[in-house]
Image 1 (tube, rainbow, N blue to C red):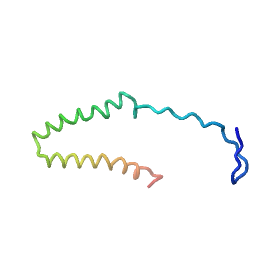
Image 2 (tube, rainbow, N blue to C red):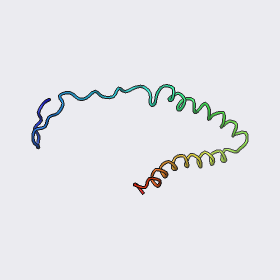
Image 3 (spheres, rainbow, N blue to C red):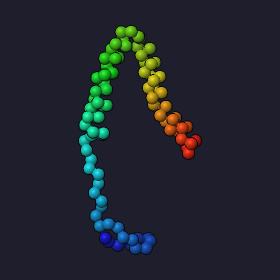
Amino acid sequence: MQHVIAFSGPQTVPAAPAAARKQGLWILDSWRDLVLYVCTPLVILPIFLLAQARWSAQDIYLFVAAFGAMGHHLPGMIRAYGDRALF
């Protein structure tokens, strides 16, 4: 321990910083990163190709925009309006 004197009275601080958390190469872990970030487009592309055969590009865009917006805004609204301490 060493003493630090600044604008306030003497305080003791640790001589060396605490060990930092080890940074890994993965966001979650190797398998979950593979499934969520790599394999998701591999599932979406065949679905999109099948949808193109049935619906027009404008219909597909409207569907993706509507459900994408709901998936983006709904969790925030649930948190903001569902928490009695915040609302």
